[in-house]
Length: 99
Image (cartoon, rainbow, N blue to C red; front, side, top):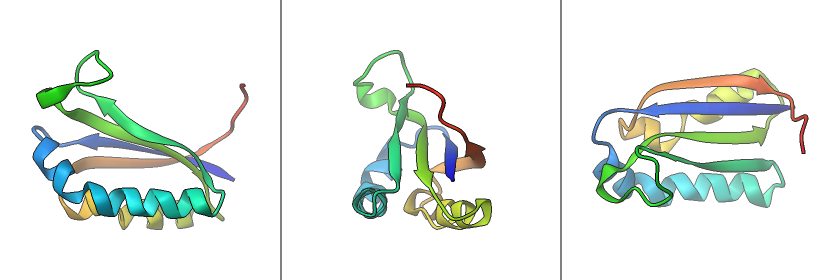
């Protein structure tokens, strides 16, 4: 089943993101290689695809996991969590309808 992992950043998280980004992307690449990643990306803090120094306000990952518990465990082990970037992470079942 698919799960949405919706994360909100702490204030001024950009420098922390830059440091933890390689490890964060490696985990996403592993999901992609396994054919389980549907989409992933950050939410710009301003209305721009390139927010520059404004950074990001959070992230969204939609991926397939065996269970809600497995998705939560994966989210809890994210390098962004370990680096203190996320102030909140919510994991919810997700049902794709469109397209």
